[in-house]
Image 1 (cartoon, rainbow, N blue to C red):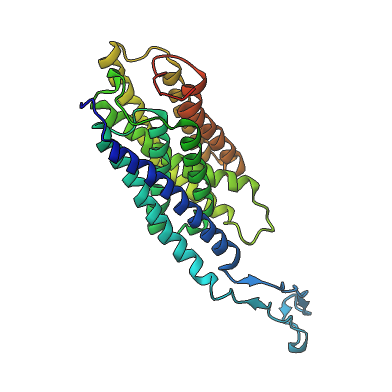
Image 2 (cartoon, rainbow, N blue to C red):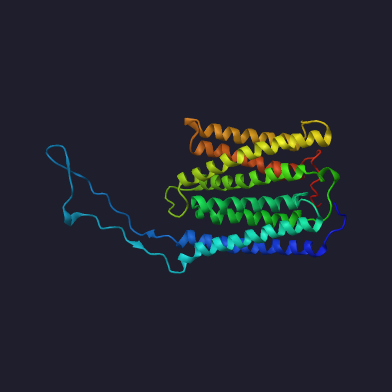
Length: 319
């Protein structure tokens, strides 16, 4: 690996990250406007009329003069119809800038661009936005856009403010092709788990009277599909990590904090999938289990590197 760093590409990577944050913020605003104004809103509710019971026990329709008026529906403003498509376009532009920042960072240092916490969080936010955009092509989940962009913007903002380090070489333990296998799988799975986590938080805070937030069924479906895809990828990441540990340290398992919390996260998501398939744990109960698993994931990805030591303590978190 070359010891020198291409300062020009490193600077371009930093500038692309700032552009990514701005594009994600504008996309978030567009999704919020689409969610708030882009759909027709029912202004009046139909009043249910009591059924008329006939002598034979059947029902008869009320007289035409007593029928309830149809609920008044207000059409959304003309500008609001464009908020959603514009937000999706800005999301793709931000996604491209995010990808460009990762590629230029890797080219600047001549290695895989996730060798420290800053690079990992940037890649994880990219994976979360990728999961949303590509799932939106298939399942039309634009209603989650504002919330996913909030998570991505906060993640990138946190990484730039507190985790950013200068582009440079990494410790010898990370100079391995296993980075492309183990860490890449963890990043992809984490992006999908973030999608599920966002859906789970909305599921718990949503009120029955809300007409703007997605339905509980939609949120449950998105979370479940994301986890069904992510769980085997995370399983592969854990196995690949054990194989890498054997190659690097001569053992598959050593009770290192990172290893322990990666396995705890795996158990927690396995518990969610089991709970989801169990009749007594559908709905809110299963979603609570999913959010516990998501909390384990976040602690494993960030908390372990910041608060705990061990063989994985080379994350280069600024002091």
